[in-house]
Image 1 (cartoon, rainbow, N blue to C red):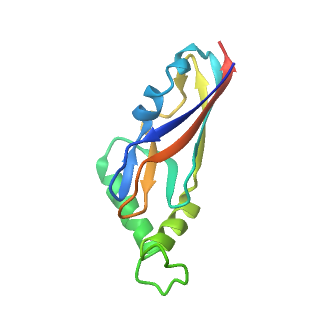
Image 2 (tube, rainbow, N blue to C red; image 1 turned 90 degrees about the vertical axis):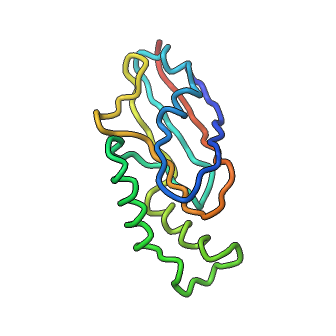
Length: 139
């Protein structure tokens, strides 16, 4: 069985946001898959998708602080036509990535106890973000 959907995530402020439940809610077919694979691709170059700890919100704040230090807005970037947060957003997205793949077992994502899927929103004013979610597996 193959299923593919485009999920539109609501606009978010700059930061690291847990989106696991929002993605799962958009694909009720997940419960029909006994063994398979979940793949999510974010169709943007100034935001990111990653997996990290989902229990303590301080992790999100610390991740945001760390990526801001990796790519600060006050560097003399050449690509600045979309504002001072644009090139740093591209760098952060390149470091964190734009896709995740997670095994499916008995209708559930095989995330670890403390793992969740994060959207890294790296722009100050971003709109909706599109994620192509693909499920492949056997029922």
